[in-house]
Image (cartoon, rainbow, N blue to C red):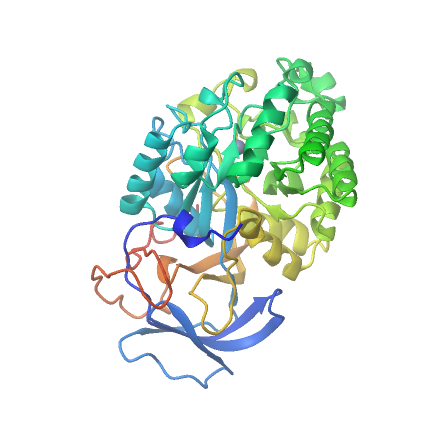
Length: 481
Ligand SMILES: [Zn+2]
């Protein structure tokens, strides 16, 4: 599985010329953990040196970054960009701007659009759109089944040829084991990853939250953990039998972690992701009946949350994914039972996890940073690194900066964020994606921006480019939203 940048798409941009002076660079994969000057020339990390040692690039900017942290750019393997068909919630431009504002330098979009991304023509048209609109590189998963209906497989080989990174019916489970078995047989031939939303509809029923003490008290229909974990166990067994490559999406409960652990110990080619909301919140939050806390899978118990954090720490769960799921306010601001499931997450993911896990001693900062980009390799994409010669894929974050998550001010078109009202630590100052500035926070430290000029694809980095950034969040939005 050695495809990479050709499976990611974005609009043309100017390769960055920039000196980041004195940032604390932390890249657990390369062992880097020290203050450095980072010189970016032609969109590539040209040189790393002790603070104050490197010259400004002749035609570039200098960013005084002492006290800030530079991390490898984050990669989100699970985002709903809502295009085509639901652009009132999000589109490729707004969704990738939200990603950049959250420190992400690449993302993978889900196919549960209208129409569903289940054929090569739709995929080609989305790739065209991404080449015009996307501020950070985007890859696409196509449906496993036509219309995500679970009845008929898509043309998986054709979709792979057209550029699909893999397949998922996310939002819906593949209920028929026979159907999934056939998909796994095709996956072995076509390549790509089969990613699974695990849920048994017969157990979930009309549930709207986790089935437990809180749902009983509220009198709401619950979704038992079994709904997810029995399908994880079943599909791990199918993957083992077919020697297929399966990725479990948004795991939410301890029973699923156990099933995943057993599959990994048996050598099955499985991987998994967990989301910031499942790692930091519990069903206790649903007592407010605020629909921002309604998502699928649902927020579960403290024991589940702890099991997820421990699995993330140990590497049993491989990576963080936001499952960024934008919804319009008129859709979310209805009684809890009627509201659609999902929370936005791109712009709050790092700060939420840093505040709730790292600052509270549940997770090391280096582990969090590694898991924030570990989704790339799972899909055969290059992993961002802070090392000489690498394309500039990094984010600069002020860990000391606090902000209250507000009701608005997002780069995303939607504001249904489950962290609204919380005070979070860690503000993204700058995101470089594929060699270009994709986001920079309005800041007095910046010199006047050099005028944008449409640049060609960078030969030295293979960068597929974004124009020099204009701030995508209004001034002040990050401190007072
Ligand atoms: Zn999803």
